[in-house]
Amino acid sequence: MSGKAILILVLGVTAVISVTFTNLTETSSQATNNMIRYYNQQNAHNIAQTGIHMALRELADSSSWRNGYSNLSLFNGILNTTLADTTFDTLNVVMITSTGTFGGGTDLEVSSTSIVYTVVGGGGGFIPASVLAAITTNNQVETSGTLTVDGRDHDSNGNLVAGAGTYAIWTTNSFNRQGNSKLGSTESGTDYAPAKVENNNVRLEGQSYPGGYPSTPDGVLGGAAMGYPPGTLKSLALSGVGGSQYVTNPSLLTYPLKGVTYVELPAGGTWNPANVDGEGILVVHNSTNDAAIKNINWGTFKGLMIADDIVHIHNNIIGAVVGLSPSPSSGNQIGNGTGSIKYSREALMNATAIGGGSGGGSSSSNVVAWWD
Figure 1 (cartoon, helix red, strand yellow):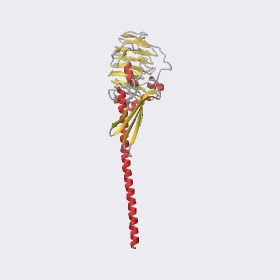
Figure 2 (tube, helix red, strand yellow):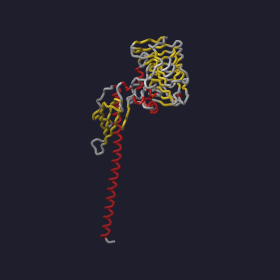
Figure 3 (cartoon, helix red, strand yellow):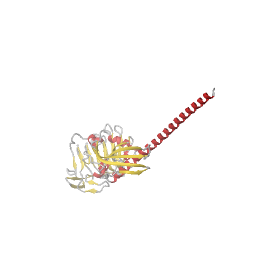
Figure 4 (cartoon, one colour):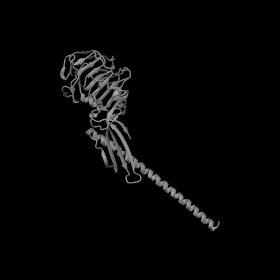
């Protein structure tokens, strides 16, 4: 091979190597940039999420807070968060828009936005229209022993709130007071202290429920019209939000109860005896409407108890009780020993706040939608 040919070959090989090296360098640089961009994206997302939680905390302390955060330095990035009053699926909510930026001032700057809709003001709680007394039932009901059913209003600790309560008993069937059981109420603004009496000042019997008495737990809370389409309470329990639990075996429950506690028993099943220590919404139900909770012997429960069949309340309940079945399999004796049911608007408001519970410290308990 001539010297000229060798020179051409060397130059050609050199050019190929140079191009290859350049391509490898560019590929390596691109891979590095991709890694940096991914890192920046994750950090931007974390900053945005942190902004959401910070805003929820502020709203938990003050429902009127709308200041947000402007160009706040956070985790080596920048946070911008705004709040606006709006509606979501007919609910009055606050929309929180949080944007995190990371890698600012470089070609690899990345922003990430998260949006949350949350109910504020009173925790989103309400008094269900189906709660018409301290005890509301769709069947013949009887009290005996020393059970006290007090429809006067109380705070969530059981202290009396004058002039703001309701009846002790409301039923579509008949009521029979026996033994030393006592009834108290608020009727037309007048409080009646618990006494061994039975009249229309303290109980209403043979009543009709407009549109038909609710047959499901979600129906008790107003159904789809109030944001509780079929399966909502069960879904909340399954989600675990606010300490919620779903079980088919009551022995698996963790105490104290919080959020939505949903006990789904087999047909004809009975939770006996029962410990209901805790708060929130307690549901004992099945598709055949014959799930029973019997001999409720332990624990103070604050909130709303909904069950197909309620037999022998021997503990303390602050809030309200609703029975679903028109023909409970275990009879109509709702209490035959010691125990008390004190109606409490505050306990009901706490219980029906979205996510349940009355802890007041969970800033995310009222979130109805979250977009990352």
